[in-house]
Length: 468
Image (cartoon, rainbow, N blue to C red; front, side, top):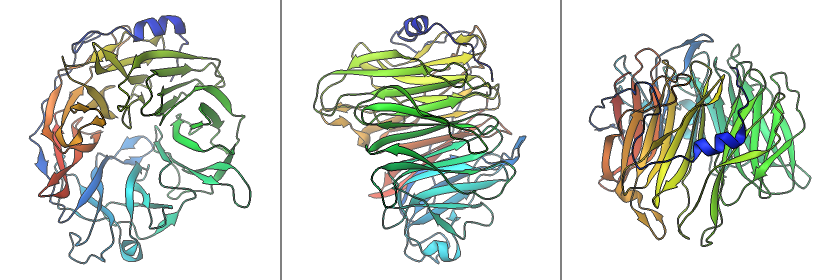
């Protein structure tokens, strides 16, 4: 992946262009039809679904995907231990799910797990799942969908700060934040499973000082070099770690405020993009800013640019996953972030290729607040975006009346930009939350799953979107 370094002042000017419509930036936007929302027969309470599509080799994604979630007894096998476990529904060749069953087996099935759930997928078709044990420590499971996960590994730190990253050829990184044993301060525990391996290697530790870490993200290039990014002490920091474990000096990227959202992409020529949010605390009226740091070679960061700036109501703040930096199949980059137009939240989206940042699009609907829900890249150099639309209240967004919409981009072309098809409703207003999406590399179809409520019990709905 090769990036030019655009003039950041010009980038900022482009990025704030916004109109209240769904704007194709250039080229032909891809239409997409979606199946009706369907209830997944999870047998019992089910939360936080994730859609995953592992690899079958470093050069081939298998197309054998699955929906993974946290389930509770009784399990779908009717042999539940009473513990909340990892459950799974593999996907048929037409991307419809098979009968749900437990993913954890044997002794692992007796461990009671708690949200949040994090997932990743490996080169050899394994599914990585992470959730908290009863003491709050994150537990990692790594296994094949057909055989399950028989062992769980305890990670350092708390389940509240976990970052996962899938590499371009199936390398996987998992990062957590933990206190330094026997000393003051914190460190980031970084574990990796390389594309030629079937297990995670020994952890690396990045000392980060005494301040509380409030956000964490990873960017990875083709070689599995990684950029670890975190928020601490009202600032955003980044540290480059090579695939052979060499840790470079940390760098200061810019300011951060309340509950920052971070996303990062690292290129193969040692350049990087980092997006993050900077909000005032709840109850405080002040500017919200979205920053972009685009590095030089190294990667070496020099300054950040404000992509968007707006003022929110005192009790309303951006929701998790508000920003996204995604590596496309062409090795270009798509960037998505929140903005505000006419008093309503919108989503700005643009592509970044060898020639820099392309003309932006705006995902918006008149009089409604749209927020980024989930993003997945596809095999045709495109992205699929899930959008959340919920009524705004004085205390945030009302997820009991949240609608889910979806759109797919056209192929990113320079200088055509990143255009989108129409926003399509996949879930009418209801108790919809925690959306996830993946794209089948064989069919180019998108699979979306989200948590809902059925007769007062957490449940999972899904829908399948046609390929481009």
